[in-house]
Length: 122
Image 1 (cartoon, rainbow, N blue to C red):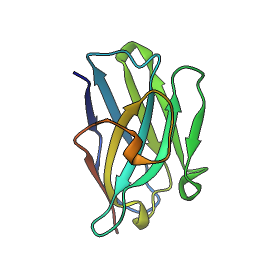
Image 2: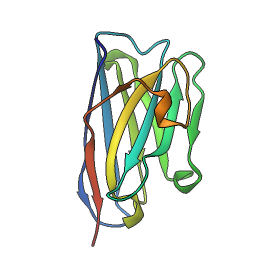
Image 3: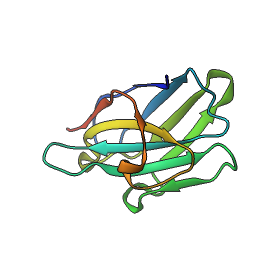
Image 4: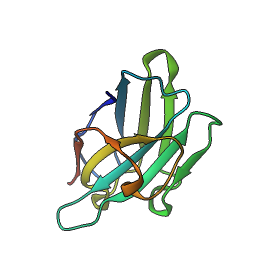
């Protein structure tokens, strides 16, 4: 029932910016959290950021604080991840996922998008 579609990934140079989108369908995001996760080959899936639609709280992993910003567009039922000052270590497949409230553990999210590749390289 729940549909999540990520977009906006691509190849950028270090220091550049990128905006990822997570579009939701079949349900409203008003009372659900959206988390962003990333996974590189050979590495564990890592929680990056989360936004709670019920109270507007946002969360970030330490490695992206001050560089990434999570936001929403209610009219489009879409959550964004604005990524600034990108570093090579940000390279990964980025996924969005939803559950009732924010949680840093990916195993707590039952619904996922297909992922979008972000590559940061000179």
